[in-house]
Image (tube, rainbow, N blue to C red; front, side, top):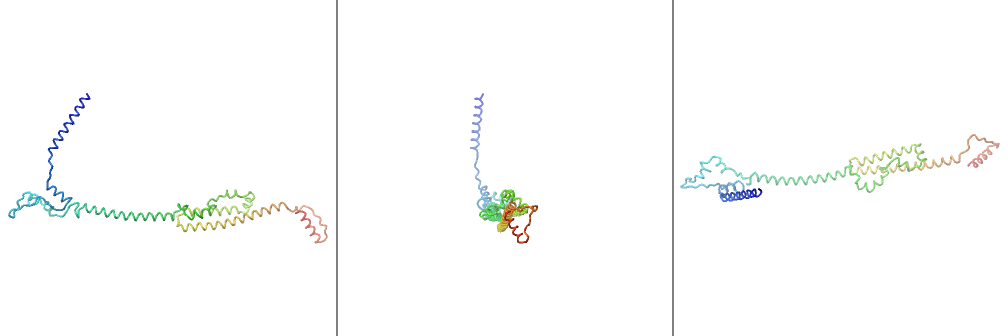
Length: 275
């Protein structure tokens, strides 16, 4: 069964090849000069070469083909076409020629626009780097100087500050209101520094803001250190006062001296004894 099927397929293939060869041998290559002239007129060479050519005998037109194609026997549109303007697409004023010239002009214009947009892009990137708050962290002056100087302001935390103090210092500074005052002032500086980071402004204004915050922080830190020193002095004075306190007023004293001089000597003696 399979062998018969293969034989049929081979037979049809041979028949197809035979018919194809037979038709190929029967084809005639057409080389019509009139068609070639039409092709030259429309695409390639120049406007002209209108075939067939006229033939005259004693001044009389004798070519019937010319009369039927271009002459008085031809349709009027043929004469208008022959005497009309150059309509070649690739001619000097042809549509395709104009389209190619327009494309070349558009390419040149596009190149000019591309260079212009590239310059705008570079300017926009520079301005974004100059103004944007999202890139303030990468500012060289901030990284080299202000980052380390304002580290305590940026990382300020009241709990961390209290952990660096003793319980007695915390109690005293809380009672006097210095601890709350310092925390509030540091919080204000921290908010201003954060605003300088996130707000879009020119680089000069941003750097000036850093510097003003730094000067205010140094003054605030100096006042804090001053209050802390006096707090420690007051705590030490209280300890000494508690340790060398004068006896209470309920102790009975006998003043045997009869004059003021003797009473003064007695007071000094008792003071030396108590201290």
